[in-house]
Image (tube, rainbow, N blue to C red; front, side, top):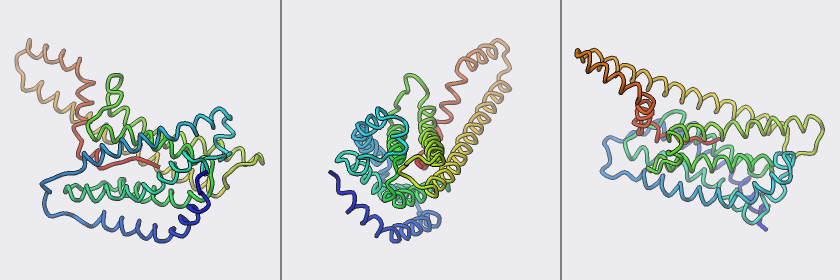
Length: 291
């Protein structure tokens, strides 16, 4: 058995210090700017080891997910069961909570690498830290889905940022990354709607109305922010690609050569847009998505 009661008390005691740390983090992230590029970047190693670590945690969480699914949807969203007290699941959930402190270090690496973290990146890390340390002791059953989907999405993201493009044989890697990041927000939001409906009908549920409502507001805001970010980036990459094609067409006066070029571009247009998206690596790497 995992000593959840003891760790839950410790997390409650650290609530105020953790949020003060979060405020300090936001201040540093918005205001600190290195004066020159560092000679050595540690970001790729950071992403690689984070990918492995998150993968291990995700695998250890699978038994809990399977048990909850076999027990029915109601159990998975309304009954915590052994989520917090089980040896494997309890350990994973607690470590996941602590990693939200460690994640702040990524921003320091970005600053050390003379990169400017995006506003959405900073907000995300602060909200993730606040959520993890606020809800750990609430014994919410829905927490199993938030933790598991977040670990899964991070595996895709960190693998991509470290150079290993998962699912690239079936779909462009940016599609896998964007889809996993959005689904880790959308699916838990759907679960909160189900839990709220069950509580409205008077069904026993390991949650409370205020907590569920807070989750719904937070997830809704993050879904809108991330969807807007991805859409605006994709539209910008499309515009860049179209301008590039128009410029090449104007410079080429040979009609036969122009026809060959158009046929080639029409065949490769999709992959070109993907390449343009992925060429924005310095900016994409500064955004790590999680609830």
